[in-house]
Amino acid sequence: MRIAAQWLTVLSVTLALVQASSGADLQPAPLTGGTANISAENTKIEFVGTHSGDKPDPRNGGFRKFSGKVAVDSQANALKSIAVDIDTTSLYTPIPKLTDHLKTADFFEVREYPTARFESTKIAPGKGGSTQVTGKLTLHGVTKEIAFPVSTQITPKGLTLVSQFTIDRSQFGMTYGAGKVDDKVTLNVVVGEPAPVK
Image 1 (cartoon, rainbow, N blue to C red):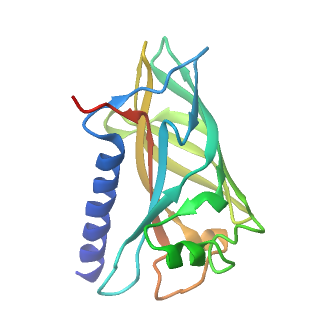
Image 2 (image 1 turned 90 degrees about the horizontal axis):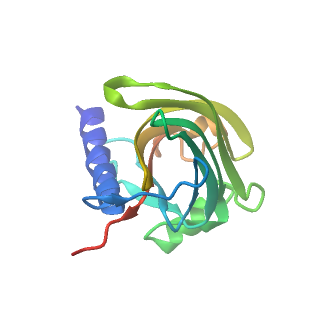
């Protein structure tokens, strides 16, 4: 019951983040030659971490600086590849003390590892019309293979993409607070700008 309650809390928070990021509709990121350039101007990369035990007390944040490319096959309406570099020094949360702590050697150690990188190695059909993306994530100086689902829309106007998945921070050498801070961290990625309010 404790685990179920914890993840129900995380789910509600992360869904709220995605909805807040995407709005009711998204304006697609434009495609040039089958490639969408992504940055903080048209994309959100956010995370939610929790404490272990009866009170998960979710903590959300994200990154203000990153750049990357998403390549698609416009004729097949299919994703081809994703590559993104994240400036970890641009990490933010609503709590200044938490932001500062996450930047230290206890977590991201941004002075030593100022860049996190993801590069896809395989794109395949997923469940329920989604796409399964597999690739290498380099975080905190450690490279591991991860896989996650994405939902995309590819139109003549451009690309939208939404994904929500978890990673295990301990696999990347982030073990501070073991037993008190949960190893599972939820990531939310939204490509596409919120449509203007009419």
